[in-house]
Amino acid sequence: MELPAEETITMYRSGGWLDLCRGPHLASTGKLDPQAFKLTRVSGAYWRGDQKNAMLSRIYGTGWLSRKQLDAHLTRLEEAAKRDHRKLGQEMDLFHLQPEAQGSVFWHPKGFLVWRQLEAYLRRRLDAAGYDEVKTPQLMDARQWERSGHWGKYRENMFVVPDEIPSTEEDRPVLAGTGDLMALKPMNCPAHVLIFKQGITSYRDLPIRMSEYGVCHRNEPHGALHGIMRVRQFTQDDAHIFCREDQLVAEIVAFCDLLDSVYRDLGFEQYAIKLALRPEQRFGSDEDWDKAEQILREAVRVAGRATADFGWEELPGEGAFYAPKLEFHLTDAIGRTWQVGTIQADTVLARTARRLLCRRGWRAAPPGDAPPRDPRHVRAVHRHPHRTLCGQAAGMAGAGAGGRRDDRVGRERTCRGWSRPSFARRGSGSRPIFATRRSTTRSASTA
Image (cartoon, rainbow, N blue to C red; front, top):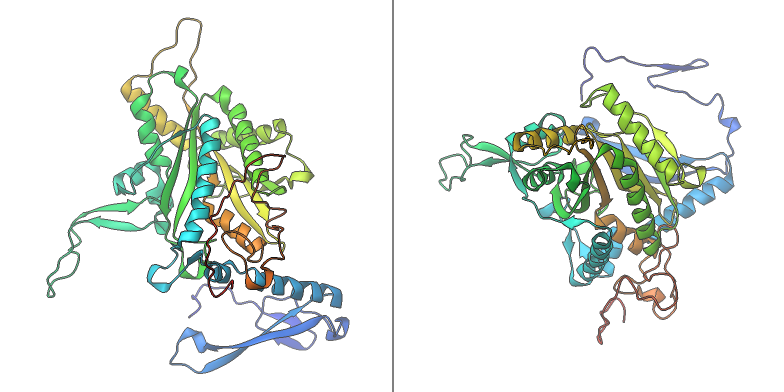
């Protein structure tokens, strides 16, 4: 690609050597341990990415301070190859991916059986925690996304669909471009607000906890897709809590406790909590953001998790455009971290909910019992099951989760996932979360 005219060109000088590079360079290779680097592979690449140009060679390598660090890195790479969930998914007949559906998963009977067990378990936990499950449309008019702010801030990540009938005539374009625009939902928030406005007229009805196993679509770049961990179509275990301002901290603490319990039931005993703060492009005033960020800090403190044991950290600029959020990160069996659950203190949709309620007529409080200024909105996401199933399958390097690899048949009984996963709840006499049927016939891969 051509560099823009205004682009800054950087150079780095090392002694008498000048390089078109950002730098820095090591002063001398003599400072390196010759046993601490390794060339790993060679590949080809066309000059400027154009196949009409000459083919260049790329040489990949890795360098470390000591041989011990290099060996540890190479061991992690070997373990990663063993735990590649894309390969395990096919070997264990759980799922597969193919180019005809970029970023979408084909779930096989064994894999979907595990999915259903996980979904049933989470439904039981949410029911017990006072959540009401709903179901919302996949496709909504672009005007709704404009009102929610997604059209202006998130449109590049949305699948936009014209509301018109395609032409079947060969001499005419498939789409005339005259229909209104619609979009597949990338998240459930606006639809939940629309349900909220239908059934509440009094602040006494709060809190309302609304959950959904919503199928969402996000237009991720092809290069960003990664197996079932980064996809375009996914099911999100999503919830929205509408509550009074004085209920916010208690609701967030309750969510943190619920998530902690679910993670431990699934074997994820260690996780880190991060507070993602306001990004440069955002909705709302600084006052709103100050209050929302402080509420999340206070909730984690009250929950007893703002400590180094929980990896507590604040991340400037990492919040969503409409709200700061708590992120829950799990570490997999080879040391990689993945964001899984989140909870967001959202004032943007809260204002939308307030406007909707004002149109309907917000029921006044009795004398001496002042109602809140407006309903608050908390978005709680346990996250989509794809990553949970991936963590279990990859963490066990293929043992369990609907089948065993051929080199572990009859020998491996333990489950080692993100930290110490187990397919059964702890405690004597407890029944397993995941139950799989056993077949009397075995496939060639397990025979």
